[in-house]
Length: 198
Image (cartoon, rainbow, N blue to C red):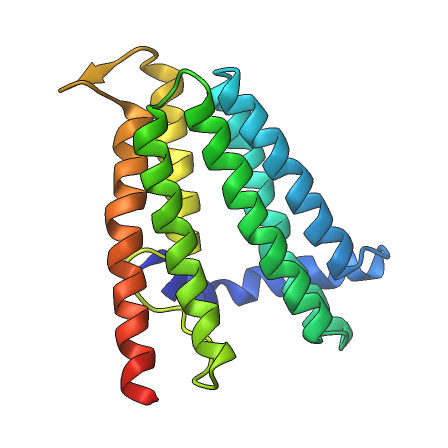
């Protein structure tokens, strides 16, 4: 079971929050934009080695990214435009956060690019399956919720173990290697699942 599999089990927490935010006049698209802005802030924080601030921004990104769809559902405003915007923003958020990590001193650029390709390809395969008529695929060993959890855990570790290096790898190098290896495994899993249905 991955963290993504737990989403249906936390709806009882998310929906009351979404209803309260909707009553306050906060729209799903506003949440999507806020999630994007805090993702940019997270990338900047990691770039400047302010890892705890980066973790806080990742938490805010996860919150606003998770609640936008819930607001759309409770207000009956869910639609293709909002879904499209959400996925575009998610990918740019991934790019800003991961590039912020490896553009600065926290991780190797080479490992960072590898991690980024794993993230982007796993996400691409999930939505490309929908584009060819199979339906969106969220399965696989490393989903977006898993990556956000890893960002939080490794970001805290990087903050409390600054400069720690094991076998030539920093804390964030290890995380980005996980993103790369398991991201590409997830991409293969999603490709295989879609291929069997075509």
